[in-house]
Amino acid sequence: MAAMVINALVVVVEVWGLVTSISINGVPGDFVFYTQCSNLLGAVACLLCLLAEVRTRGGAGLCRSLRWLKYAASCCLLMTFVVVITVLAPMLEAAGQPGFYMMFAEGARPVTHLAAPFLVLGSYVAFEADRHMSLRQSVVGLLPTLAYTAVAYPCNILRLWDGPYPFLQVWRMPLWVTLLWFVVLLVLSFSLCQVPRVAAQRTRRLTQ
Picture 1 (tube, rainbow, N blue to C red):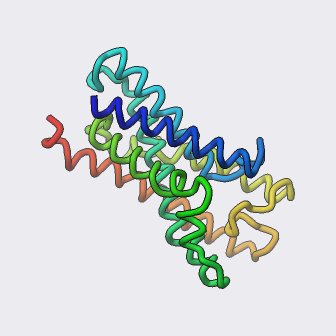
Picture 2 (cartoon, rainbow, N blue to C red):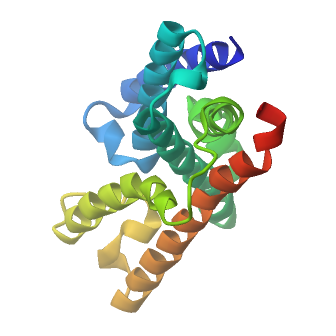
């Protein structure tokens, strides 16, 4: 019941957050942002888990693909939170703007940057985790980020996009800086994939 309630809550707040963001940025412009893509993935994962849990009256019957989808969503949303709090907000603060307020209090950002990452991560770890996931299998959490990167970098190279994040603006930095950002973000993303995996294994006894 708790899993179903949390998944339903996530779907509701994610729909509100996405609709609010789309009203500002439009479609498809809103989904240029990794934040919106990760939140859409989170909404879809929670909706599918909710439907499966309603059908089976609990999470015990969830298939591995659904568990891995929820895992990937939690990884991407965690990446969103960490990049916002360590890169984007500090950059805005350094430019003389209220970066943390802008990133966590304006518009739909309290949902997309803060509430959704922790709700999805918490519900995955508590209710839907694949508690036997190996380090090698955790690469599945990296795949959506790689997919976004595979689109974002070529679009910036071809000047179809301008960012939308400073580290994607390849025409405004030397090649070595672009490569450094790519490596750092790739390592960060894979490292964050271990947070829900390890947390799920550590809490295994509590959920049995």
